[in-house]
Image 1 (cartoon, rainbow, N blue to C red):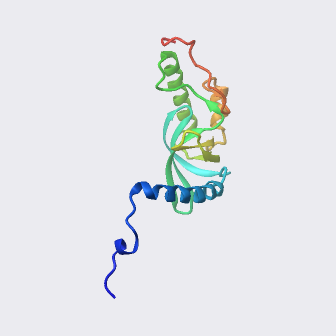
Image 2: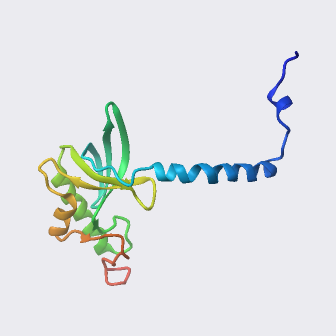
Amino acid sequence: MGTHTPADRRPNRPAAARLPLRLAFLLCVLPGAVQAAPPALPGPIPAEVLEVLDGDTLLVRATIWLGQVVETHVRVDGLDAPEMRARCPRERELAESARDHARRLIGAAPVRLLDVQADKYGGRVRARVLTTGGADLSAALIEAGLARPYHGERRQPWCDGTSTG
């Protein structure tokens, strides 16, 4: 009845020998975990906008459950807005206009997130965004000519193909 250490009970296998066991475990566990994730949270989920990064990306603090708050980047669903880091000066100007218009539409009021789902690029979510006044941010930016409708197809350039716009 001596003292046993974990090394006494388990054979010391090299990492390469343990790899097939780990892969087998992941192959058994991951399909269930992936299927368990909901395709989308219908919302509405109240969120405070911490920053409008550009016309189609927000940093928010969202209340996802009682006392459960999460900070995340939100890709505004349904639109493609010009990029702030574009090579083309004209696209950068359009991006600033889209960002500024989104800031004005949102103001200091909270927004509501609808149809929240994982974004295809990871690290953020995709959602419809409604302002406190009920305006759909995507529709408002498209109507103002500062964004285009987008539903996952290949993005179209904002400039004529030259680096100078």
